[in-house]
Image (cartoon, rainbow, N blue to C red; front, side):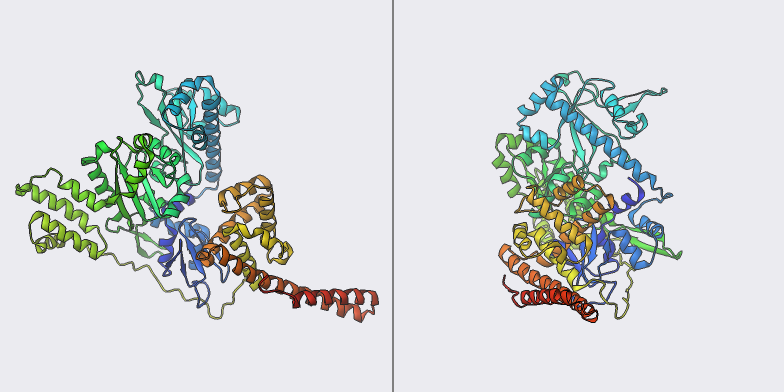
Length: 639
């Protein structure tokens, strides 16, 4: 990961912009009055999911770097230096070649994932591995969807394959797929004779593997049941969650993330129809992973193995709570003027709701699902709050006649109560703990007061940004209408055939919008898209396969993000029928503006023809003007 990507991955765009602009949650996004021009109605939108911002008034937009550059008047390197300390990144010299190296490594991982998957599904060497997966209840469709694979029991099988694809031994080594023998310039495959589970980043790129030993070698394997890819330039396990690329859409829709421990737990759950599930791969959830999930939801449900329901679950719950809602940390760094400023560490400023799922039928979610998928769904539905779970387990089999046990229990529970931000909820837990321990609430509150050593940090880095007076919008009304029409179609693709009947591409404003509209029509006419639900990732993939010009492709991919942002901003409350009414209004306005422009053009040509006594041209233009005028008069606002 180059330094730009590392900084972006560590920073939450919403939190950065909040240092300058007060944001208000509206639907899945945040809105505000634009800091770059004067406006009464908020048209500045920030997407926590896509980590982009856009003002639909003045047209400015981009990522966290473009926002800081625009607002602070910085160039890219200056913005890089300003944001690095906020992200906790030790800045090195910026080298564009790093980005190229990252792409090479991603290509290696994608090639390897495809190769391993082909071996599993087509090679006789992998028969026992394939039988094992099917025996664990995985359907062939699931194996295909998750691209599960197999590595041959060979020292150089994948090494040879990748070298034949013109990757160097050093590049393959940097990807983590090979190991270099000590004191020798010799490389060999890291994964041999194992079932391969690709680990993707949140964009769906394979960046690592978790490799399970083949069943027939399990009894004699010395390296362990599972071995995983090492840390690489494209893989940082503290910033990856298994299955997030497939679960993020469902997490957002259900406003809840289910976190399990094992990869098979996540895969089995998705196969059973519960798809808002990710795996922490057996480790405690860290702050960077929390930030990834928080882009989509604030509700976290943890599923613990049934045999870990006691001390392990309690410790995990406590650790998760501590990691996520700990007191905000501060860092100090120089700004571009050499002044020392304080910043809030974004990795610890979280506000989430935690619940615990209890597994009863089976030792883990995977076994529970294989026994009865409905019991897994019921367990999720019956999840209890982390505090309820923590409270219950703290006092489980605890002899409260022993004063020492009382003190230990009080210390544990009070520590958790301190992390509750809602005062009403906190007050109810004070009462419950006091009743349980048979002590005064006042004693407990005094104990908490003594533990609080620092007051809440007040961020002094916020400054009022005064926008320029009388700054006019740089976007024409026709451009706004064009973007609104396309945004509505993305949100309600069922109406595409309707707009096609009334609006031709040349009626829209903006070259990118016209091209986008044409491509969208081709995309659906070819049967590539689902006409009831727009899949942005599928459409981008289709664009990538059908557009050779890289700049045009980048412009259209950016426009997809902007239009989806606009759809969330203006149309998130509409149903399909109201959407059609709104679309009809926009269609009529677009046609009126297009026809008005056309009439003005004809008038100009008529004037020129009359000056030059071009009678034939005058007759032709007059008839054309009459036709357009008639079309204007017949505009039906209800279509």
